[in-house]
Image (cartoon, rainbow, N blue to C red; front, side, top):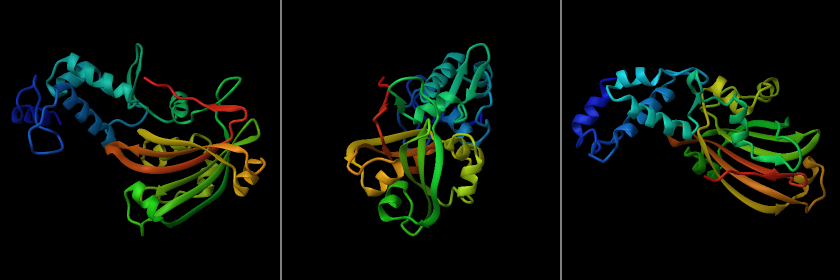
Length: 263
């Protein structure tokens, strides 16, 4: 891998001013630290360093890529800001994992009005494989005839049903995902995806709106039809900006609120 970077630099304008794009043949401006960031990300994607494992030190990476330690540090700073790696003071830098508590709450934004946030209990309503509806196929960048795994579940906080979710996952990636596996797994769902299906959620986009509970939602959440709910549609992406999950959730906010941090 150490031979990749010199080719990038030599084929571009200069190491300081930018180099050829990693993905394409045409020359583009690309700062050196961004080239290093791409190479480290490729190692993460290939599984060279597994979730939860420590990656080589900045000094080791600088030697590997034949660049300065400062260049490596800047690349890792960006990877840390994007939650791909985690710095631990006095220990090193580790590949981020969904099994860490802070990673779990990164994607679970519903928090109680009082008390500390905590993970909900899950009740699986339905799991089945079917052909992707056209809208789902477009969102997941697959063909309409392709297989998807459909999951419906209710999440409860302190015994009170609070979230009704429907998920669509590409069937080719999530082969063997069943209700039994979901029920037997005691950790976070994204942790299961990461550990058993080799798929890590990197980022997500969300669309949020308010609506009223229909009869089905009212029954599953134990509320009256017409109760106000928060509707959240999320598309989650893995490495390479590949969509791997469409999730639609209905949130009961009588005792909770949706919290996001803007930076």
